[in-house]
Each structure stands twice: as structure tokens, then as C-alpha cells.
Amino acid sequence: MRPSNARRSIFAFVFASLTACTSPSVGVAPSAPSFFAAEWIKQQIAEFDAGTAPDTNRVAGKVVFDGAPLYLIDSPCCDFYNYLYTADGKAFCAPSGGFAGGGDRKCPAGIGPLRRRSDN
Image 1: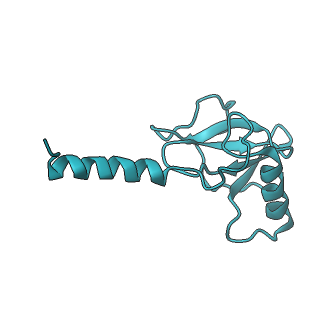
Image 2: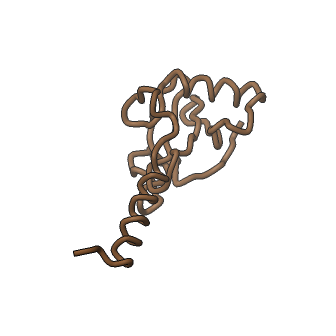
Image 3: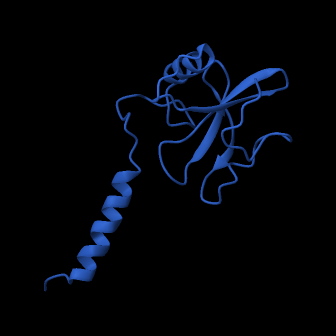
């Protein structure tokens, strides 16, 4: 029995959706729980702070919490958390992203949900 055109279309849509959410940096070992390696995050932060960030820089903003800078880096795809990172590349919390858009709800009071906010 041959699958109908509707089944083929659904399969193609699901396959394309999953393929679109694949991280482009598969060869880089991520540090939990983020998609990105700490060294890569530190490089992105250094470019952002120096004002030399190219268009490919993923730092979306910076906030200062409890005297320490935190950097918002968007996830590579839809429905994943957007984490705030410390200057040494460690995930702090996720103020935004996820299925509902409200982050992981683990950020301290005064942080989140936020997008592209800068408090220099």
C-alpha cells in the first residue's frame, strides 16, 4: 500500500521542522545546560564588550545583576530557552524562551522575562 500525498506532506513538514532546529555548531561540545561551549560564549562576550561584535555575534543584550554582568544569548532555534551567561561562560538562568516564552522560571526576582535589554 502506497502512502497518500497527505501523509507524505506531513512527513516532509515534520522532517523539515526538525532539521530547521538543528544547531549549526554540532562539532562544538556544549556545556550543560546550554547549546554552546564556554569558550565560544567567552569569545562572543569579549567581542560584545569591546564593541567589535560582527553581525554573527549572538549576544542579544547585557544586564547587571548583584554587581555582576550577565549576557543574554539567544538559543539557535525556536522553543528553546535563551540563557543569561556569566562572563566566564556559565549559564546563570533563562529569562526567556521555551514553549511558553517565559524562560525556565529559575531567575531571581528582578530578572526576566527580557529580550534585547542593555543596562551598561
